[in-house]
Length: 209
Ligand SMILES: N[C@@H](CCC(=O)N[C@@H](CS)C(=O)NCC(=O)O)C(=O)O
Image (tube, rainbow, N blue to C red; front, side, top):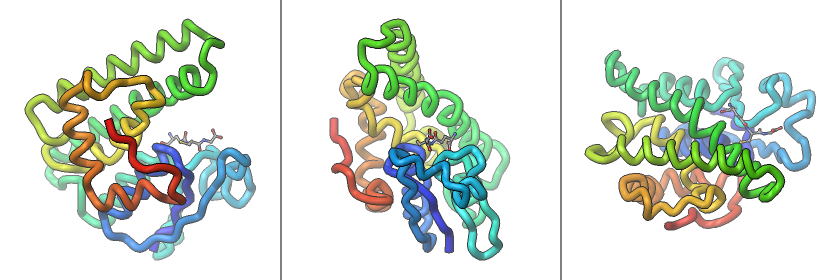
């Protein structure tokens, strides 16, 4: 049994979708970041960076923050969605790190400047939108001749997908990135993804291009 501390954001959905894909039993604890619940002392004990998601593995009491680390831990624990052989394993880790270092932080800036603070900082809007298009281009080229970002569906796809599901916030037209669109729709059709998307509560249907 896993305790999942999360909210209705891409980083939170990465872990709820993964838990659904793995079929692990979990209890959801909603941490409403719009009400600053991430700063509560009891949450800081398991997530000292005051951010969701975080988990506690009840079998051992082990707690973990940072979605990338959580995904590696859960995949390792179950032996699923992360290959064991060194090269395919590091191909997955490579694209997981690409999400953690690029897609997450950069698209997060697009949400901040373009969706929530439009007009306040034109230079930042231009900079992060340009970077968003560059990253979508990288993903589109990667998916030209392959179904998933690594060799098979993996934690790397699950990490990237919830960020792409905010394409409307990012003013991205998925029709400009045909391979990303095909990949996005294939993952959106998975029942586990649909269940995980609605954790800790349903906010909207999965956006469709
Ligand atoms: N690198 C962290 C980022 C986590 C993160 O930024 N979480 C956001 C929601 S998506 C959050 O908790 N924000 C609360 C705040 O900024 O105080 C991860 O991947 O887990």
